[in-house]
Length: 356
Image (cartoon, rainbow, N blue to C red; front, side, top):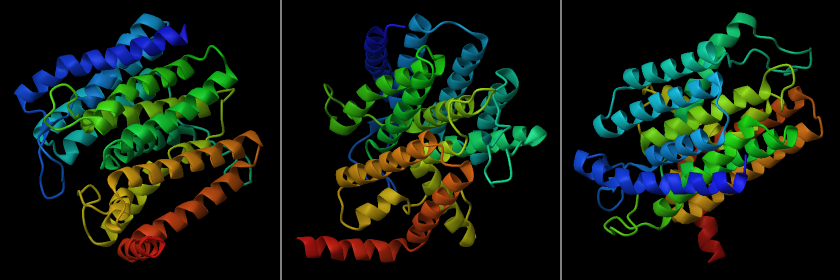
C-alpha cells in the first residue's frame, strides 16, 4: 500500500463526508443542542464520526486488500455508526445501545473469529488461558472499550486526540512487527481520517458556514472504541502476538480508567453507572480553573506518557505480572484522586493562584 496516497485519500474522504453529510444533518436535526450538561454555543452538527467512517471506508476499499475478516469489520463498524447516529438523533435507551454493541461484538467473535483467550502471564504462574470463558470476556472488553471512548467525549478534541494517540501506537507496533501489516495500515488510515475532524472540531465556529464547528457524536466515539478493541484483540492474540495482552491496558489507559472510576463512584452513590454527569477527568480540570484547551493538552499528555510507559515495558520484556502491578498502582492513584474530585479541584485552583 502506498501510504502517502492512502493518507491523502483518507483525509479527502473525511472532508468530502463532512461537506456532504453536514447539510443533511442540519435538516434532520442531527445536532447537539446546549443544555445544563452541554455548555456550548449554537446547534452543532453531530457528523464527525460518520464522516471519519466514510473516510476509512472509502480508503480501505481503494487501498487495502479484501478479506472476509476485514469485510466483517467494515460491516460491524457500519452497524455501530448507524446505531450511534440513531442515538445522537433520538437519544436511545441504554438497553438498545447495549444490544447494538453486543451485535457488533458477536460479529467480531463468531464471524471474524477474533476474541481474547490468552491473557499472558498476568500473575507469575504461567500463561492465563481463558478457554471458553474468553468469549464472555471479549464481550465485556468490547462493551467496555466502546463505552469508555463514548463516555470520555466531553470537551472539544478530546476523544479525537486520545484516539489518534492510541491508534498511532497501534500502527507503529503492527508495522514494526510486520511492514505489510493489514492491521497497521488500518490503524494508520483511521488516524489520518480523524485529523480533518479534529481541525473542524477545534477551530470551527458554531455559526460559520465556511468553517463550521462539528462534534464527533456517539456514532464516532462508538466506532472508534470498537475499532480500537478489534485491533487490540487482533494484536495480542494468536500464535505470534504483536504485543503482550497487558499492553492493551496502557494504550487505552485514560478512557479505561476514567470510565471505571466514574462507574465505581456512581455505583457507590446508588446511581445507574450509565447516568450522565460532570465528574469526568476533563470536568475536574475545568473546575480547577483550566480552560478546555489546557485540559485537552494535559489529558492528552497523560495518555501519551502512559502509552509510552506501557510500550517500553513491553519492549524491554518486563513480565506481564509486573506491568499489570504497575498499571494497577497507577489506576489506584487515579481512582483515589477522582473519588476526591472536589478536593483535588480546590487544590489545583490554589496551586494555579500561587503560580500566578
